[in-house]
Amino acid sequence: MEILIIGSGYVGLVTGTCFAEMGHNVICLDVDKKKIENLKKGIVPFYEPGLEEMVKRNMENKRLRFTTSYQDGVSSSEISFIAVSTPQAEDDSAELRYVDEASKSIAEHMNDYHIVINKSTVPVGTAYRVRDTIQKRLDELKKEVSFDVASNPEFLKEGSAVYDFMKPDRIVIGADSEKVGETLKALYASFSINHDKILIMDIPSAELTKYASNAMLAARISFMNEIANICEEVGADVGKVRKAVGADKRLGYNFLYPGVGYGGSCFPKDIKAFR
Image 1 (cartoon, rainbow, N blue to C red):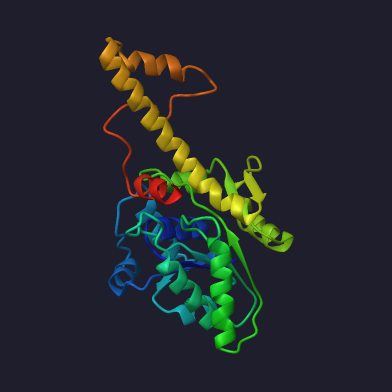
Image 2: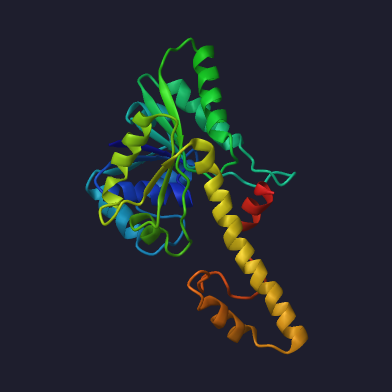
């Protein structure tokens, strides 16, 4: 398929490169001219195991290219993924101005049926916001073009993002039409050969799944920190408690390590936005 990835940061670049690796033709777009100039030279702006080699390989095979032009990107694709940043706003909510800007730009250069997919972590209702933003811009331009909007949240861990994308635990697709669901199912077919990992649901459920997953993981970390504090009070060994708790197959060991708290680029802002 012909795919456009809007936003060539962590999520966008990994997503686009992995799609290209599986045989799709991908254009990664970013408004940062310097970033695109470097990517055209094979210079990746962050370290992720295996990514730089994969970028160079797919550029050589003509399946992956980079641009700053929406006209080039949208007109050359049938599916656009919005993978722009959603930073924390002053009131702790998710800032959606980059999502809005991408939506308007898609509308301005869309001339045939198009599927627009939210890959960024966004609040419930954002897909419909994107739909309304695109339709409003089309109306302003007096253009009649049909399109659909869907949700496809990412579940990538820093340090293993390429592996997570190529061998996902699950692929969540939020779609309001069977046609879009089947199209995205075909897009991801190569990632689900071993067994069906694709979960197709309504758009709000898909959007909420991302926040619920991050909140659950953050809650596990926070809970274990509370247990660590209690251990200090009563003279218990939190390391031994953790191993015994994690041995329960219903609970498992992941995200049960006590420490200073949760961090990274996603958990703090996502939990605040969810709250």
